[in-house]
Every structure is written in structure tokens, then in C-alpha cells.
Length: 422
Image (cartoon, rainbow, N blue to C red):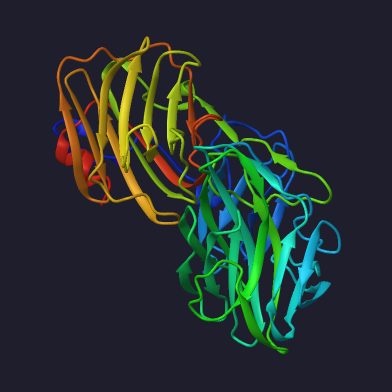
């Protein structure tokens, strides 16, 4: 079928990959030096082996999300799902292997709220070190069984949030340095809840989950238990600084590191690729977390392994508040750099479509049907690039899912680039 023409240029992409099909592009190579976990089409958390790409699904709606790409991260919780060791319980009846976990195994524990006025808590016996000025992702899985109770999930003694698993309601924040609470609904009544902990000192602390009264923002309060409320818990995680909250990393006695995902496609595999003519990149993606500490999140990254690159950036901690960036660099000299601080604030699991166009005189950045920024001038385009990295490379992984990306040869007009994101 003939392409439609606009001012003599093709309106169909020269290259398109829909990652929801679960197949890597022809000619691509993939590496990850460890196993990794993602949700399958039935909403079950499933392990992929070393060097096996992950194609993720929404565990609640079961829709395909695409290729999951994450940077390296370590879970420092020594026992993430066995609470018979490495954990201390107070005024709860804790039963290991009593419920079906999100991975389909009978490894989730239950917490029964004891009767009487007391602190009703499960707390890690080991403490986890953190460094002043860094931000750490803290997460767990929880499910209501009976009672409609509230829990308080915390780190550092006074940082965390209250949450009601029966309704998915987020309650009060505590008095510490917490932010970015996310409650992700999973299958079979499960939730994965998480938050970011900002360290104000260099020390160590513990992870804890308590029963609380509705709206009680006092850290680790004593409450009057009813003797009947019960929760299922599983999969605690305290992650590497400034990575955010990534997919589950199981542990069983020691910290475990999941390696970075790296997908590489030779630029020679892209029909029509011509660095000297400019082009347009379009990506549809979901960030699963927001990284901090100046770490980028790139849905697509073109690179020569050194000082030449073109990047479509969803978020950058190096530019305060930047919700989207498009840029290219030649021999360490920035040529086009459009950073837009007024674009929608990056939100975990929000589907976005973003485009970056470049040429020798014009650059454009668009998102979700809006032309957010342009740049005009005389630009020297990067040369010698050899590979395109869908989902980013190891240092600037999107830390989320790439639904699709497309490439158009040649520089285009503002309206064309904007229209690609609608």
C-alpha cells in the first residue's frame, strides 16, 4: 500500500515496533545478567531467566504493557517473604505460608490482629543502611482477608503512609520524609504499596507494618485490637539509592541484585536511517517509578558508546521538575536540548506518548497531543552512532514499560511531530 505523502515525505514510519506482541525486533540483542520478574497475561508474577526479556501486563486489567526495562537494583531485605526468621512480631498472630501470593505460590503470610490495647506490629530484625541526601524505594504486597483494617507501612520509624487494603484507600502520611506513595492494584485482592524515603542523615533503620486505626498518623501507635482482623503480607523490598521502586526481587537469607535490562538494535536494522537528515522518534510508554538523584529515564536512546547520542527522555532529575526532554549531543557538545518543566508531572503507570524531532535547523518536543517545546538554530548532528536502545541503556533505563516506538527519516514540521503524539 502506498504511503500517503505530506510535502514529499512519508507519513508512515520507516520503522515501528509494537512491544505488546511479546517479540523482540529482528536483529536485536538482549542481555540481563540475572533473572527478573514481571506479570503475565493472567496477572501472575512470573520469573524470567537470565538474558530473557520481560513483557509485562497490567495485573489488574490484564492488558499488555510491553517491554519491561529496568536499571540494576538490590533488595536489601534479607527475608522478603519468610517471616519466621529475620522479623519480629508484636501482638499479632503470624502464620507463614498461609495464603496464595501474587506469584501463585502458597508463600504469603497472614497477620491476625490480637485483642487488647497494644502496638500490633511486624518489623524487620535487621536494619538497612542509608546515606544522607539519597532517596530509597520501599515496597510490600498486602491483601485484606477479614476486618477492613488499616495498616501503617513505614521505614525509619516515622516515615510512611496508612493504607486500607479492603478499599484501596490511602490515609495519612507520617511525620517523616516520605513521598510518592503508590498503591498498585493487582489480581485477587492484592495491592503493591510503595513510597520514597528521603534520607536526612547517614544511618540505618528498619521496615515495619502495623495495624492502625483509621487516619491515625502517629508513628507506630498503640491501638485496641479486635482479635479478628486479618491481612496477608508478602514481598518486602528496600532498594538501591535513587533507583526508585522496581519490580519484585525475592530474597531468602541475603540481599539480592537484579541486573539491568539492555536491549540493543543496530541502526543498520532501521530502514531509512540517516543521521545527516534528521528524524523523529516517537515512543509510547509507562514509567513504573520516578527515579531521583539526577538519574534519567529514557524510553529510547541512540548512542555511539561515547560522546554522540540522541535521546527521548521521559524524566530527568538533572533538570528540576522536567517532565520530558528531547536532546542530541555531538562530541560532548549539546546541540538540541528541549527540557520542558511545565509538561505533565511524571506519574507511575500513566500511559504517555512522546515525540522528539531533530534536524540541522529545528528541534521539537511533543507529548500527548501538545507541542511542549521547540528550538531553532544551526545544529551539527551527531555522527558515528551504531545502536538504538529501546527502553534506554543500563545507565538511563526507562524503569518502566515501552509499549511501542517508531522512527521517521528526515526532519519534519512542528505540526507533524505534534500529531504523532495524539
